[in-house]
Length: 364
Ligand code: PHE
Image 1 (tube, helix red, strand yellow):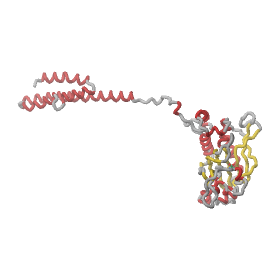
Image 2 (cartoon, protein in one colour; image 1 turned 90 degrees about the horizontal axis):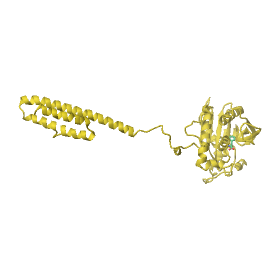
Image 3 (cartoon, protein in one colour; image 1 turned 120 degrees about the vertical axis):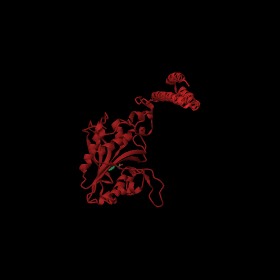
């Protein structure tokens, strides 16, 4: 074994390693360091030498082996890094690319109105309550001071479900007012008995049903109920609450709001809620005309008593507005039926971006 032979081995191997690609590098490794590789064979040949020669040759061969091993590791590190860089470049996702326009959905205008109301009433400390679409006769009518013989039932003709034996049939709720009952019953069992009860302050956006169908009536529509119960609640609170809500929702600071004497079995006194507008131009806030947008009143003592609340200690107010009605007014939508036709062009036009928040600060 000559040191010249070894040198010529490293002289050819090292540049070949430095220039190798991933596949040829592996071939070179097997060729040089594998079981029958050239360096391995040289190491094996040491066994046949006499001790003096073995010592000298052994040192040289091991030196060559170290050089070759180091060169292979260094080349492999370079190749790995290149491969990673290539993959990162190839698999890069450009997050700045605009989305395909067709894949963007919009929030239905009625859902948007509900979000806006939630946001406005949250600033006044109201929580959101919900109830089922299918209601008992008692929650929808009787507990609200509308007994079965009462003519007010005729104004709210609805859809009746099959009756259990000897009981009045469940109904599709004609208004969101039964959630008043549900909320007060729950409250009377706990909070209403305490020495300093936290008041009820809820809004109830939701689906309602009546047997009506034309350009301004749909058998399914939406309302938002409001209910406040506590000690010392007055009609002044009701009026202030409605004014803040309507001016915030329509974005008109001086919007005229009128409470007009009316009748509901579950409130006393009862008032329709009107806002000022110009009938000719449709402009809200201007002109001398009035437009009805909901009902309201002080919760009737019978209703409080029906829910187990002492009317001598607690008072409250309630109101209900039609969500389609106020949405149509705000956006100039002429026909109620469009809300439920699922025409994608219409939805795109009147829908809201899912990325914008409904908040008073951002201008509802
Ligand atoms: N529930 C009534 C309706 O649907 C509206 C209303 C709610 C009136 C609350 C007074 C108080 O017509």
